[in-house]
Each structure stands twice: as C-alpha cells, then as structure tokens.
Amino acid sequence: MKYIDFLSSMELVSMALRQRIQLHLWEDFHSRLVHSRFYSLNVDWKKLRPMIHKRIKNRAKDYPLRNMVPVAYDLLNAREVLKEGVSTLINIIPIKACKFCPEVYIGDTGHLIQTCHGYQRRTKNQVHRWTDGRLNDILVPVEAFHLHHMFQDIIKHDQRFDFDRVPAVLELCCQAGAEVPQEILYSSSHHRLDESNDGGAHAGCSSLLPQELKSVAQTTLEAWERLRLGVQKLLLVYPAKVCQYCSEVHIGPSGHKARLCGVFKFESWRGTHFWKKAEVDDLVPQKVVWHRRPQDPQVLLDNGRGFYGHAPAVVELCSQAGATVPSKYFCMMKVNGLHPS
Image (cartoon, rainbow, N blue to C red; front, side):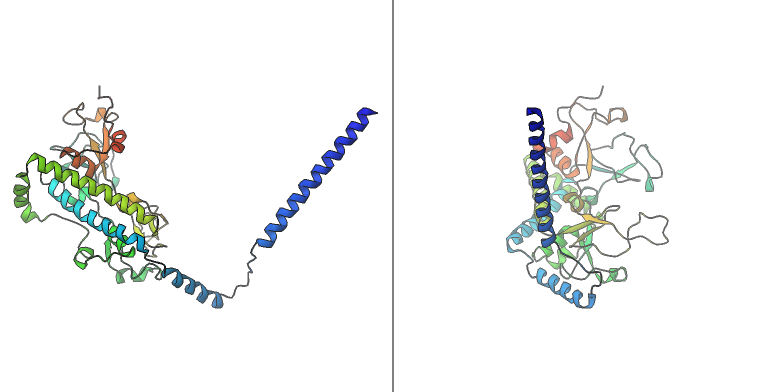
C-alpha cells in the first residue's frame, strides 16, 4: 500500500509539473503573439514608399556627428604626413616591385622566393622579375564614388560617369564632416613621383643625417598608426561597403549598382558587386611584404620561406630607416624565430 501511495503521489507531482510547464508556454506564446507584428501581403506601396523616403531624409539630419569631426581632420592630417614621409623614405631606402605581379620587397635586391603568379595569374611558383618601386607600391590607392550626401539615391549603372572617383579615405572624411580642400580631394589617387625630379629629390634626401632619417621614419610610422586608428573609429559610425569578390569600395549605407565586378567570366559584361561591411584593411591596405631578420641571409631563398617573417610595407620601410616598430608586429615579423637551416 505504501508503494502504491508513493506512485500515486509521484504521478500527481508530474501532472502538476506538466500543467505548470504548459501554462508557462502558453503565457510565453501569448506575449509573443501580442507583441508580434503582422504584415499584410496586400501592401499599398504608393502610400508606404513616401513614408520610407521621409524616414531616410530625417535620418540624414543626424549626420555628420559633431564628436567625429575632429577625428576626420586628424585622419586627413595623418594621411598627408604619411604620404610625405613615405615619399621621402623611398628616395633613400630602395624599393623593388615585381614586373608581373603585385609583390613588393624593401631592399637593394629582390628576394628569390618563388611566389610570382605572373600576369593575370596564368602561372605559379615563378621567380619574380624586379623593377624599381614607386609610391603606389607602398601606399595602395583605393578609390570610391564621391557622393553628394550619405543618404542619396543608389547610384545606378548608367549613372557611374556622373560621379567623381576620389580616394576612399578622403570620401570617408567628407561624409564625417571634414572640409577637404579641392586640390587634395580631386588630385589623382594614383600618386606617382615626378620622374623628372627623381634625381633632385634623391640628392636632397640623401643629405639627411642618420638621426634626421630616423626622425622622419618614426613620424611616418606614427602617422600610419594614426591613419588606421582614425579609419577604424569612423567606420564604427559611418557605414562603408566592400565587394566580396573584388577590391571595390563604397562609402555609404548601401553599395552602388554599377556593374564593375569582373568575377563573373561567363557574363557578356561585368557583373554587379556583392557587398559586405568594409574593414580598415579594405580602405587602407597593409601590402604585406617579406621581412629579413638579422639571422636571415642577405638574399631570401625559396627553401627558407617557412622561416621568414612578414610586415606591412610601411612598417618595413620605416623599420629599415631606424624607426621603433610597435610590439604588436613582432609576431608577424617572427623577430625571435628560428633561422633557415
């Protein structure tokens, strides 16, 4: 009898628990049902579309944010200091660029690591053909459409020639409230050294004392860090997009409709971009290069490629000029790594 009474009491307890769970589930479902939104399939878009446009226009009134304007101006200043510093250093520190691929090396002679893929990546594992590098090989230009305002209508394919192309960093600063001078904004983003003045510039820079050269390198490296930090801060507030399959960048809440992506080879024209959120490296590419350590040979060989380190091109350039490299790059540069056997 005691065993039967125990079973009956257990059944009563389990029944009470089931009822409590069912009641809790019903209350949760009822609360979700009350607070849920039901959208009708028969939407009158003629009435709804003006409301959407009005909401977008009201949202645009909140930009630019006053607190981010000083960040944009500091970013502009850092960009100019970086450009001037790199232009000075590449006249003293030799730069080598591959003739058939984007590979760059900071040094008197190029390395012998077989990583060249040739023009349009038609070959692989070839030795590079080195030529003298330029400013664009260190500071990779990234352009974007210059918008009239952030929340304007999406640029269509047939409107792609109605908007100027400007450096993406400058476009970000413009949308952040900075007044960029016209001569800087509309100057070509493909910064090339004047070949006719290369000799004079080299002669003037070669007269720098070692301490002066080190000061220029340190200032340039600090400007590089300020530039990337400023872009990171602005991207937390201002939207930017980058294509998943190419390097196209658009500064704004949504990408443009210009069919400029060349990833679809089967199409008779270039395809539309597939946009995702842009990061700092999309607007300010690091252009990673090989780093030669004191324990490495004078010319980097292919059989030791697993031991050598890497570094962003600007960091490597400033390092060879005497600047103190931040510790966050030590792991990438493999400072204390083993030498090739």
